[in-house]
Amino acid sequence: MSIKSKIESLLFISAKPMAASQLADLLRAEKKEVVKAADELLENYKNNQAGVQIIKDGAKYQMVSAPENAKVIQEFIKDETTGELSKPSLEALTIIAYRGPVTKIDLDRIRGVNCALIIRNLLLRGLIEEKFDKKKNETYYKATFDFIRFLGLSRLEDLPDYEKLHQDDTIERMLEAKENNAG
Picture 1: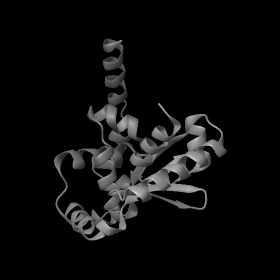
Picture 2 (picture 1 turned 135 degrees about the vertical axis):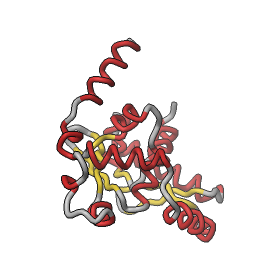
Picture 3 (picture 1 turned 180 degrees about the horizontal axis):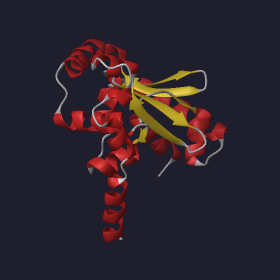
Picture 4 (picture 1 turned 90 degrees about the horizontal axis):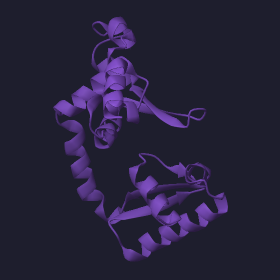
């Protein structure tokens, strides 16, 4: 697979701009090679008049919807962020609230499905936030102050059975057993 293809995939799944240096680290490539490939992708998208574009701000790149489609995108986001949360979204939000900070991989393992779209939706709604841990090279998700305030709590620890569920290792034991049986 080409470096352009990999950059395109990373930008597609990322909910935020990605620095050329971060892309280079992930791809184990030279930064100048990444910048060249990302700039070529940016031009390709611009020239193809596609529904998505790649934009550049300094040394950061992000995949975004085409400006011409702003109206239809705003309608979709309004519907998606003001409607009720789906059962899978509520499950993911509960896991993040009780177990957070949690990685996407752990959330996927706990729920048994890919949670990328759910995470995106919860981020858009302002119910969760993400933080990148440079030491572990992973993104973690946790509940936001808005989520806590929305529930009428002063802190997450006020959730019912928070201490018990936050520290309970049942999920880890269950996942380990599942992995051992699969291996």
